[in-house]
Amino acid sequence: MSSPNVVVLGDVGKGKSALIKTVYVYRPLAFRNRRTVVADRKDQGGEGEYSELCRQLGGSPIRFEVGRGGSRINLLDPVIGISAESSTQVAGQLQLLRAVVHAASGAEPDSWQGAALRIAHLRALAKAEAAEKTPVLDDVIDALRLAPPADLFGEVPATSATRDRFAEAALSLAFDLERVCGDDLAGLFDGPTSPDVRLADRLTSFDLSQLPTEGPAIPLVMTVLNTWLTNLLRRHRGWQTTFIAEEGWHLAEGVGARLFQRNSKLARGIGLANVVALHHLADIPEESPAVSMLKEAETVYMYAQARHDDAARCVRLYSLPPHLLDDLMQLQQGVCLLRIGANAPILMQHLRSSTEIALTDTDTAMTGPRLTGGQ
Image: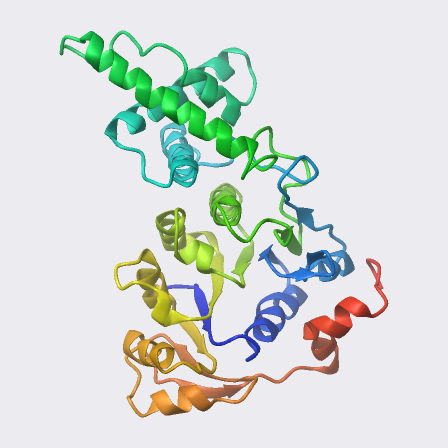
């Protein structure tokens, strides 16, 4: 197996969620050293649709919401880095900071802003180390207001114009970060990581259902969660872990797409499988990082695509025989084309036990009597 990553494609209501809940959550947890982490986007009665299942398995959903009532992840948490070495850990944190800046300003940091952010990040780390504490995002914002270091320009004479330009770039970043962390991202990244943000032995459910569907909150939280998990698994090996994003557009597109693509390449070596569900392939630009992610997935489930352009894009992307285009548009609910590696696709019908039918019928599962852990 060259890639453990999985893509599930198809229109709404065709069986993608039922497949993921059974094949990639419920069934694997019967085995030792298996766990699942879910970025739970769908609102069911005021909470994520995996919340009740998480409680039944002995856990508690980790809830994120804008404001002060939910959990937080510190972007400068030592867990967030590419490896245990401090230099690459710094690089991993800086990439996430750049993603927040992109969300705050709507554009990638330019060269002056990039230099200001890098210096502020290093200053925040140094100050926190001297104080024997973990730095937080506010430390970076404070560092952006400091005068540039004396050796910033090396042997090139520093004029007042160059210093003013650097200071302007740094100050604009500070204002952008303060605004977005006080409004769109309030309570999500503006402090230490909450104690409940940890891996459970079986199912860890990050409830994102109450985050606003528009704006930077969801794509950034999903990007940070995937990076947090990837780097945590590099330090603690021995388990097979599945990360699920049922509405995966925020990983395939936007500010975190390249970070997610990079993290996906590490998956095989750390026992991580990323399972991403998407709806309309035709809406993805050809040059998007999502295209590489879709091609690199070893396992692809293709449910019915009612739109001709979606089905045609699916046929082209996975080099399917042309005659399958019409078949792909007419598949019944619960039936899909399954392609594993370079093998020819097979027609698959997803069969569920009575327990699994109840589990995946979100209407009855959420309106019926609630079960407590252990029952």
